[in-house]
Length: 367
Ligand code: MRU
View (spheres, rainbow, N blue to C red):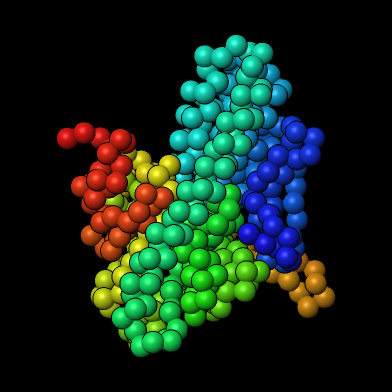
């Protein structure tokens, strides 16, 4: 997508053919800064510190992290070390494990002399595949939007609510939940997006609002608790969110607060869509609430806020009583019964084991 009119992906190979460039998302929306990753440790740090985040982009960064590790040492031991180091950076987004499994399977049986080139080539493929997948999700999601829009008065504005950031910044390009929004906008639909701010790290306010603004999509940032009120007043035509891990039965793990939005949507008869690339499906898990590990992050993400002063300086301030304990659960699980449809690169399906197996007969567990 474009930043100040120039096309960017969120991750790319630098001109030297070895180091990897990313957008440092911890600096947005105040500063647009790109940085270079030159070693495994830097790739792991980028994921852990959320310079890159979002399930698909975490996967692509991990793939390049393995390539950086191979460039330094193409041994079996280094491959295993890279796998373990990257796997423990973030526990919830399953694309991380998927990308690492892909890389290890691709490299394991190759002679050491071929591993560096093979690692960079597979990492680039994983990134390109993500772009194609998200492009297809956009096309399928747009069809769902059009079906709902067609039932409104001709020319009426189409209002979509989204949570967190599932835009191009969370992927390599296009985004998952935002891909159909970009396609609708580009096709001339009068679309407007309600953007949940998404406390505590504000991915909605800092990232979703920023990238929608860069693309010229109409949007309004709302406090996280506003969605239910808007739905009660007919101001939301549908919700669409991304996911960090979806089970074989259609339970959806996503940024904390998603479940409450799905409950409000069900109570108000508002369709609740979840957009996901197939590497986000964890076919080994059936019960999302019981089985998906939920990342707990530092309480400082709650008790501190970063912002820009009128003089342009970016500062971080404490906003909580000094001694109050903080609990910071990063994700929650929305049971499949609250999800109207899953939107994948192969089309849409009901959020059920049968629906998913019909779209992915080659991957779904048998029986
Ligand atoms: O903690 P983050 O920012 O890595 O969270 C991931 C997300 O961006 C969201 O949960 C998103 O909705 C799913 S990833 C496309």
